[in-house]
Image 1 (tube, helix red, strand yellow):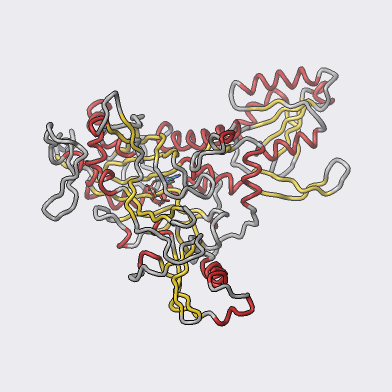
Image 2: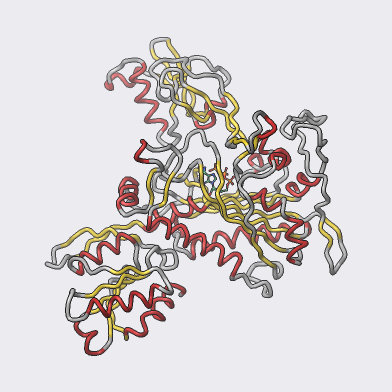
Length: 547
Ligand code: ATP
């Protein structure tokens, strides 16, 4: 999560209201809720699964299935091909050795002996605070409201009343715990005394499992922490089987798992989540241009589906943040409402990865008798990547040039995108009810393309043949899109229920339908109502969704 100086659109949205709507209307549930819940795991309910699937389908369609291989897209250096795969979640353990995840994919954690809480070491911030000749380093996990929290904690720690605030002195500003040399007298974020934090310990984020009946290290395998590696190890298979030519991309959508130390912020940081990743293979000479193209293309995609420009930023990584092999990485970040003003959370990273991944999977054959998970260090003392030993270079059939392609990786999270679209969609306005009294209306303003239900069909009343006509229309439309039939309660109430579900159009069959075969279409956002012929409904709604 980062701070940025951009002015962001202030969206008066209470996250608690969204969380409660998400549960009440069946977007998201805590996993295993009846057993007390499982932290970091979330289930999608009937509306949520449609929303997330629509987002994944939009991504797949825009990036892969509807991609035009023959034309040059705006901003692209050349035409390119796109293709997809679906690899397994459990891969050969050596994949993670070669990719560096086995040795390097870890966070440092610290435990508090008093509160029994566990923290990510790099997420704790604090400040030196003194009173009456005692100096302690008071900490908090909340980087945004750190100053205020530390002041309150200092009062509690020194057992002072608020009116004596000014007796406390502060040295230096708020700094990360990792940056201070003196590790004594630290007051942990939820501790009452100093000195209760353990030493930081390395914690690999990959979930371990055992394959087959073997016990011990031989059977050890991992749930993938990213979908990308499944693409790299299939690079040769795709080239050989589908006759793609560089430049081309391979896309994959699938589950990834990370044993996050502190899952938080609804689904933002989960332990099981879905990724939508592209590995785009190009000639090294053109890779800078492709990197620029993908950054812009992916940024525009979120906007087209409804994320407002004011709440989205593209953040270029600083040189010291870049992996050693990357010449550029940018994150697309969104001003999630649960973050403090000015902070943004990552939706997608776009990285220029050079030839690092293909090279890692290619170089250095593993001794068949050695344990693939043994840490082997090179002369520089760093863990050595031990690839398959297979030749993964590419030979261009037209130019006959042989080279190792460079890779641009747009890597997005389906759950984070879903959460961003949920946050963006949530709105409240005031509308008169049937008696003309102003009422607060909760409305989810999803882009029609990702809305879980595209249209709701109502008979105005349950008589005069209206339900029969409405049901027939429902059956016709249902073959083409997800529509909903509702005949219960006053029409105003039915509209409200659909507004909360984010349904962009409601179609009502009324008395006039019986005489002239027209229906009313009501627009969720403009509240405009207009009549069209019942036979034109499918074309009308399809046009609006696609338009
Ligand atoms: P972060 O810094 O937030 O942990 P990351 O930089 O480790 O994210 P990547 O490894 O680049 O993330 O993964 C690509 C995308 O996968 C992220 O942009 C995000 O959308 C998604 N993602 C990563 N970790 C999680 C998680 N724990 N829960 C949900 N989505 C995630």
